[in-house]
Image 1: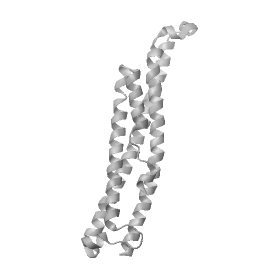
Image 2 (image 1 turned 60 degrees about the vertical axis):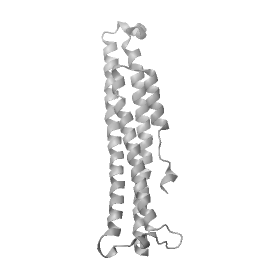
Image 3 (image 1 turned 180 degrees about the vertical axis):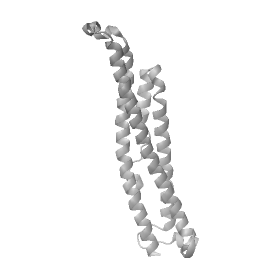
Image 4 (image 1 turned 60 degrees about the horizontal axis):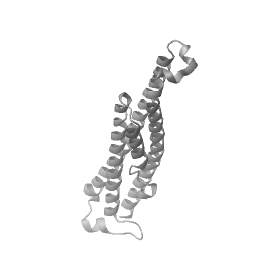
Length: 186
């Protein structure tokens, strides 16, 4: 029984590493999102030739600046999509950890009874708690990933019709969303 608990501890160490990656990706996505919002907010100002003053004498300046901003925005969107794919990879990893953990106690010579799943060894959690913890971690991270994906996918719609209040609301949602605190996974 103790060997099984050690295997679960190894699983949780791997999960902790993935959660550290999650935190890194979260801060990167937030930075990318803020940069995209800044560009979208500037688009209306950039398109107004009255804002260029003496630079209006330069032929095609408005189009050139707008094109550069749109290229930057496209690069940021590509980066955000890559970051979201990294989130998705972590969610899939957590799902695999949970699924493998369930299979581990159900098959072969290791097949455990309900009583064995509830048995505690010292201060360590029981196997049922470990399985539940893996399921909860997967569910929380999947939900956060889906929310992040939804918020990011709403952003391109604002390029054509920028609204400061909508941008501010999406930005606030990205900042305030139910980010999973690090200590939640411990």
